[in-house]
Amino acid sequence: MSKVCAVCGKKPSFGHNRSHSMRATPRRWDPNVQKVRIQIDGKPTRAYVCAKCLKAHKVEKVA
Image 1 (cartoon, helix red, strand yellow):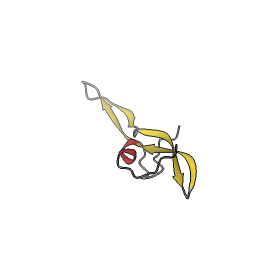
Image 2 (cartoon, helix red, strand yellow):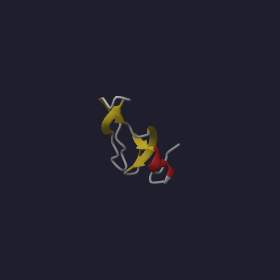
Image 3 (cartoon, one colour):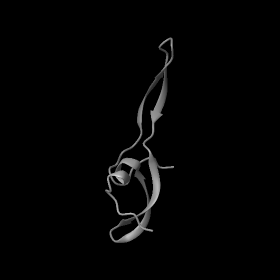
């Protein structure tokens, strides 16, 4: 599944998990991306949009 927001372009960020002994293991933080039907150029399309953009009403949802 694509983890990139179609509106703002938010994508996963990367870093490390740190154990008690401070050993670093790789990990990633995925954005809260939802698959919704939105209007792009006047046509309804399914796209992945992050929850922050949905809450801010940056997209027009189609029923």
